[in-house]
Length: 97
Image 1: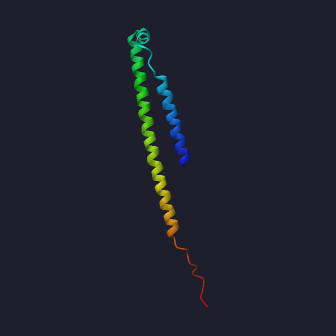
Image 2 (image 1 turned 60 degrees about the vertical axis):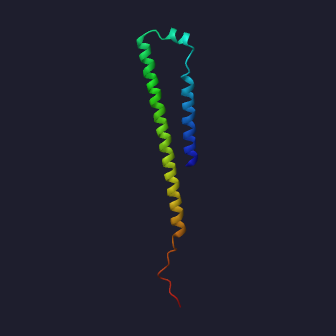
Image 3 (image 1 turned 90 degrees about the vertical axis):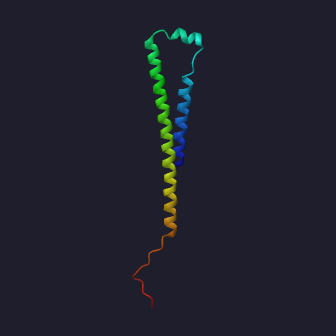
C-alpha cells in the first residue's frame, strides 16, 4: 500500500512539474506581441485560474493520501496488537483424567 501511495505522489509531482514547465512566460516583447485582444487576455486569465485550481486540488489530494496512509498504518498496528494479545481458545470438550 505504501508503494502505491508513493507512486501516486510521484506521478502527481511529475505532472505538476510538467504543468509548471509549460507555464514559463516568454520575454516581454514577445508576450506583448502575442497578447493582442481582450479575448486572448481573458482566455489566458481563465487558463491561469484553471491551473491554480488544479494545483490546489492536487495538493488537497496529496494531503488526503497522507492522512489515509497514516490511518491505515494505525489500523495495521491495532490489528497486530489485537492478534498479539488474543488468547488461544480453549477446547471445552477436553477433560482432565
